[in-house]
Amino acid sequence: MAGMVQEDGASSVSSSPLQFFSMMSLSPGFGSPYPWLRELKSEERGLCLIHLLVACANHVAAGSVENANIGLEQISHLASPDGDTVQRIAAYFTEALADRMLKAWPGLHKALNSTKISSITEEIIVQKLFFELCPFLKLSYVITNQAIVEAMEGEKMVHIIDLNSFEPAQWINLLQTLSARPEGPPHLRITGIHEQKEVLEQMALRLTEEAEKLDIPFQFNPIVSKLENVDLESLRKTGEALAVSSVLQMHRLLATDDEMPRRTSPSASRTSSSSHLQRVLHMNRRTLGEWLEKDSVLMFSPSPDSASASASTPLSLAASPKMGSFLNALWSLSPKVVVVTEQESNHNGPSLMERVMEALNFYAAMFDCLESTMSRASIERQKVEKMLFGEEIKNIIACEGIERRERHEKLEKWILRLELAGFGRMPLSYHGMLQARRLLQSYGYDGYKIKEENGCLVICWQDRPLFSVSAWRFRRYD
Image (tube, rainbow, N blue to C red; front, top):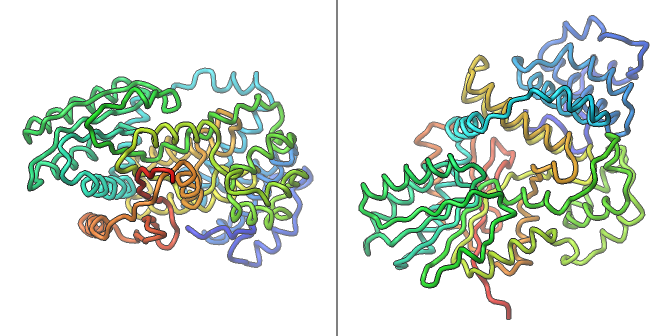
């Protein structure tokens, strides 16, 4: 499943039903799917679904509401949130495409979502379910903690800033490791940043209890805030050795610089050459080249500005101003180590179709991971797919401007961004990789791999990279 979509958007397997289907045009004359569609085997049905989904996404990107509507109807006969992996993926992607289309009618969109209940408690429960069901966060925490322990060797006053403080397991593990230091544990202060006060209160309670049990001098400093509103300078304290942990959080800062006005057309992301140029400038050279190569396939016409953008210097391809100022503020705190975990996929491309194709490949692997761990009937698996993956897919596809928070980017982009901010790369140690691999073995996680890449670690499902972990240190300018 992880490689179910090729880079050019075509299915990786061909079959006679799909070849026949590819010659059909989605038009009102065809109505409901042909009877043979219902009788297809699982693999053939999956191929048809992917073909339909890509065709429908192209119609949405082009603003062709009538054809997109016909495509959604066709898909609805084959997709299912309770079916096999492709059926479930198709169900969530079509929901996202439909939501994007509905935003062309703000009144209708608001009316259909007016009674939607967003429970913070449920969101936290689902995040914890993801932590339990998949090894990604566990691996990130183990690797991050090892980098912090190594960087803080011999330090007596340690301060950690946790940019997404919701899971106490990470720091309980660190407290236990620090308690066994030959020179004794340091005085530890953790600043936890989260938008929900209740989450931070639970963190403080759990960590304080553990620190008292281990007899470690400890302080938890909660900051109830969005990441972009945090005053990092106020966290400076003389005499402390600083570490920063960012797990699946830093990419959200990219949305704060995209203050585009709300669009009235689903295809409006293609209508403004200035905003298009801004997004192109967010991409590095290699990604831009790949995007241009796929241009004809993705039905996207670049603006005239994109040619000059491709020849830009690395500085012009650097982080957005808000991201840049945030990283500069981190750099000014002189941290001994900054560990960044991010999704290894480009969901921040300039065109809808690029994001659709990238997201299809990424979430196909994520759905496969859950399928290997939990049964299809599992309520927990369904919750993670709907309330975590499904909401991320909807944000990537249906939202634009500041509403689009899930702006995942690849490791090569984060390397460029952090180096431009003045940080130097710290190769993650062999011991950290060894600990991560032992964790996979102890939990019996099959199908997962950890690879070293440019001194960073990449966590894969089969051979598909899904998450990257990189470590950085303060570096003075020459």
